[in-house]
Image (cartoon, rainbow, N blue to C red; front, top):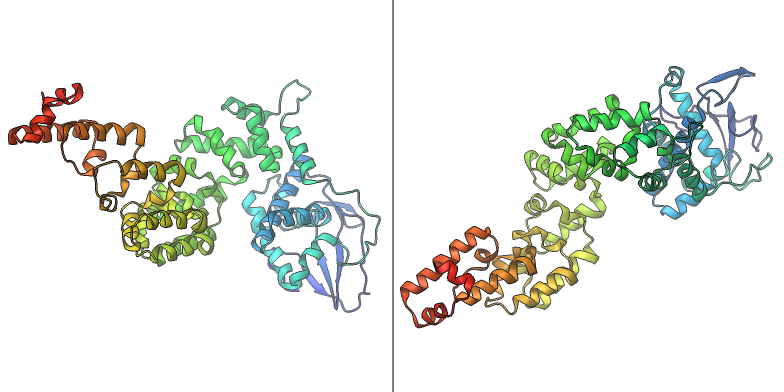
Length: 500
């Protein structure tokens, strides 16, 4: 078996019998043999803290809350790995629910690889755990291919074979584990108080229900220490200029932030993003928009940035996009960005310009969002070229709801004295409030009898709109046309004031 640098040493032993050799229980073991048909492999998994008894390694000196947190982190990594292999969330969850022994094995690997860290009492960060386990899981996938799930579920026994030891107690469901984590954050201690890290968050404005909801999404958070993980990250965010009132929102969106080392992960990631053009003065806003950005690997960021360069965006514009819409990094290049770019190219749109103006459009579903909007305009007599022009001029056009936005505004537009081509010139029409801007302003224009372009009616400030309309009315009066006289003889109070 080929193993990565972070995986346990694996050797081939031709003298092994074709069955499992099991040593000393589930959580405390020094060597476990897994039999795979036609192959025999030995996985050496040494725990970081040795008990000194018969060479057996165990977790006894590792604090129970830290051990529980590491197990949750290991499950999260394994879930992520399975999802990348194409498994659904449901299948990945079912597999992990059957794999307590394998989770213990992954935790023991962490202790082996990072032995010196544990000896000095230093906790591993989320990214360090991920970076240690992913290469090992990849090596297992390369070795076992399609039967990897069977290997994980039956660990440490051979896939399809009956376990050679007394079965462990039934696996606790994911639901029950979440309940335990939630119970932990609301547990009253002997001093009659909630846990320190919970009181700390409540002091920032979070309520206990928010904290419980956050824990349901990410159970490992229940086991994070206040001084070691949560407080340093929160204080760092405050130093960046994040308003105190935004802290609850940020942590609720991405509690994993508190599992990241400031010096080894978070700050270097920020430096990397700044080198890509993210405005360092805007970090407070960027983090509020997408807290997850700082938990993404550099590889994930690089894949997206490379694609943005590929479609012709300059380094400066890429930096502006990352600052204004960091969510672009969360979009898959293969599943979102590339297919969406191809779709807009079919409409004759310059994808680079569209991405710069409206990057959020690239997070929409082609089938559920983009095609219905295109068909809406085609059905109303616009050509593909005209639709392409509209979206080129106003990229946010495709982000609006058909039912709540486009249809009612279109129906009102039909009552306005404008040709349909006016929307091709000014598609921003759909971005203004129908009740608060479009109807009131057009009512004044219609009453005056003046002729204004649609963008003159909507795109200017209230003061500028009044100035333009007043100028038009004055011009009409100076021309002394019958129409203008008739119109101004019956000015309403608002227009009368404009004339004066």
